[in-house]
Structures are given as structure tokens and as C-alpha cells.
Amino acid sequence: MKKNLLISAFFLLVPLCAYTQEQEVEPEVDKAVVVDNVKAAATAQDALQKAEAPANNWKCTGIVGFDMSVTGLWNWAAGGNNNANGHLFANVSLLYKKDRFAWDSNLDTDFGLSFIDQTKFPWQKTSDKINFSTKFGYEFAKSWYVTALGSFKSQYAKGYSYKNDEKTYISHFLSPSYTDLSVGIDWKPNSIFSVYLSPVAGRITSCTVPELRENYGVANDKTNRAEFGLTFKGNVLYDKIENFKVLSALSLFTPYSKKFGNFDVDWDVAVSYKFLKVLNVTLSTSLKYYDSVLIAGKDGHKCPRVQFKSVLGLGVGYSF
Image: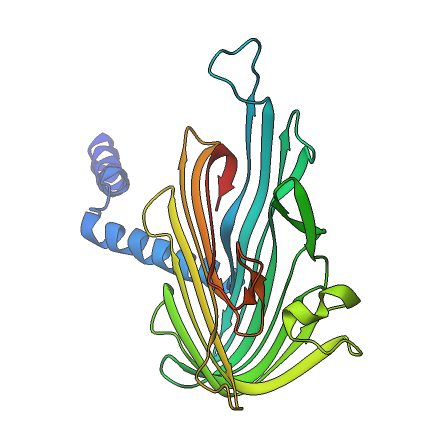
């Protein structure tokens, strides 16, 4: 009897021990498969996030800042006058690109004042500019756009010419101003450079101050002069070097008239370098020639002349 019980207990314990050992054996894990699965999951998550995030079709870039200098003299043997100079400026571009459509807008503006102590006219305007342009195009071939363009140019405040302790009134807001409308072809091979040509361009020259109209080719009994002609524009926006930026805009216009080939020229350049996060060194130049703008020389004779202005400043600025 005892022998039979021992045999029965043996046969019951053997399967139980075998089951226990089987449960304690851990399955082998293929690490390569696990790594591949993790990478696949991460790739899928990145793709999902990109699909959910809206595309940023806008780009805003430019330079804004303020330059100032002050000179104070007291019993200064070498001579001179107390003076202060201030200059506000901004050159900002807003760019949009989606599918075959592109929209570019630019505002280039500045205003500067100078105060010179012990002079007949202590407050004098040193800089004053409003240049705004916008163009909308459709890409019909790679880098080529059929484009509609509009632009406006004027100044903010009264301007005077100072000679021989006398001042002569020469400009004001909308006196003059230039409004251009055109349709043409725009070539934009990259984000830095673009060229625009239009054989269908109109320009309206306005002057609201009667005594200034003769200087800008506007009839005395009118406030506007309209012309139809050809226009060419070139733009450069270089910002590939950190803290360094170059903006340049060239505009040419010639009317379909006896003066065809006599181009009105506007060429603006702005170079900026930012250091110590908030300080900016800027150099801006403007070259102009308008065939209908009469400027008096030293002898008082009025005729079209090349105009040039340069401003080199160190001040607080922001480049983006």
C-alpha cells in the first residue's frame, strides 16, 4: 500500500516541477527588432507632427533702429557749435509664398533731425523718406512670374534748402509724390535676388503745393502729371551671414515720349551689422536722378541734377 502511494506521489510531482521550470524560463528578446520598432514609431510621430503643423508661408525680414549723437562745447578754443542729431529708420520686407503664388511688400522709411546752436535756423531736417512697394505674382514657369506691382514714394515733412543764411521751401508731404502701377514679368531665381521688367507701366507725379509744381514738372493749374512708359526694378536681400544684412533696390522708369531713354533713377542701399545684441552699425545710401525735377545750382540755374545722400550711424537697432 505504501509502495503504491509513493509511486502515485512521484507521478504527480514530476509534471508539477516541469510546469514550474517552464514558467521560470524567460523568452529570448530580439534587440534588433525592438530598435527597429522604436525608430519606426519615432519616424511616424515626426511625420504626424509635420502633417498637423500648418505650413509657414510668411517671412518677415528687415532693419529698424535709432542713431543719435550729441556734441557739447564750453569755452572750446578750436571753435564749433553745440549740436545734436537724431535719425530713425526702418527697412522691412514681408514675403509670402504658397504654391505658385508670391506676394512681396517692402517699406523703406527714415526721418532725421539736426539741432545746431547759435545759427539762424537751428532745427534742420537731415533725412526724410517714404518708399513703399508691393507686388503680387503667379509663377507660370520655374522662377518666372507674371506680376502686378504698385509703389508709392514721398516724404513726411517740409523740406528746405539752406544757403547764405537763407532757406528755400522745396518739398512737403505729397509734394512731390510718385505713384507707380505696372504689369510685367518678375524673375526670382532664389531668395536673394529678383528682377522685374514691365513695358506697361504708369507713373503719377503729384504736387499739392502750387509754388513747388514747376520744380517737379507739374502744370501750375494741376496737381498731377501722368506718364505711360517702361519700368525696370532690381532687388537684393542678403541675410545669409549671421548679424549681417544687405538690402538694395534699384528702380528705373522712362516714358513713351520724346524723352524716351531718359531714365528716372532711384537706387537705395542699406547695410547693417549687429553686435552686442542691440547695437547696430548701419550705412545707407540713396542715389536719385529725375529728368523732370529741377534743382538750383550755385548760380541759381535750375536743371535736372544727380542727387546723392549717405548716412553712416551707430546706434540701437534690431535686425531680423
